[in-house]
Image 1 (tube, one colour):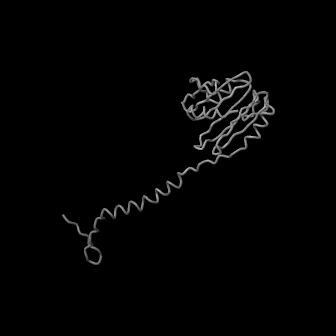
Image 2 (cartoon, helix red, strand yellow):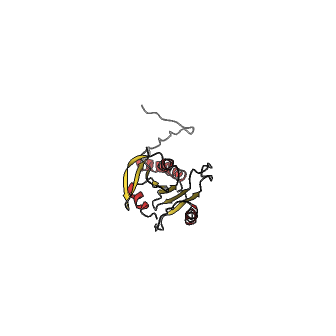
Image 3 (spheres, rainbow, N blue to C red):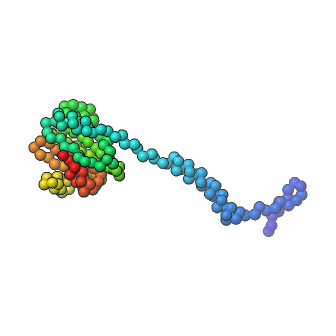
Length: 191
């Protein structure tokens, strides 16, 4: 059965031809291109800018005031960016505005791959420092660097690794979301 439509002027209306495949592809592209461009524009996340800090004056002050020998990296490549440098004497307010339990030095660096490595030192509450720097990590073996033994720690989510050593004067923790080999390489630069 064929249906014809008669228009007011008495003529039979012509059927509209079906679109061809290329025409349909052009129509779909005309709709999708703006949608994709809008999605890309609004979904892009700018890379956060790390604010570099000058860590040498902080270490100089800590070395002058701390009752223990303060360690700092020596001969780091210029592509590493210091993003944290803090010296907090015992009893002074720390980052959380609570009195520091010990003389605390904190340094943080971004590697060229934008991975953070932290160096924390303190002369009191060794277990608290290790717990905080390792994100509650548990013991995971041992590393020996230059004849010195460092305890390894790994966080419960297996993301953060830490190396810690405690002697009679202070506790030192190197931590980051990196393999132990990278932390060991950083720890060997400390002097």
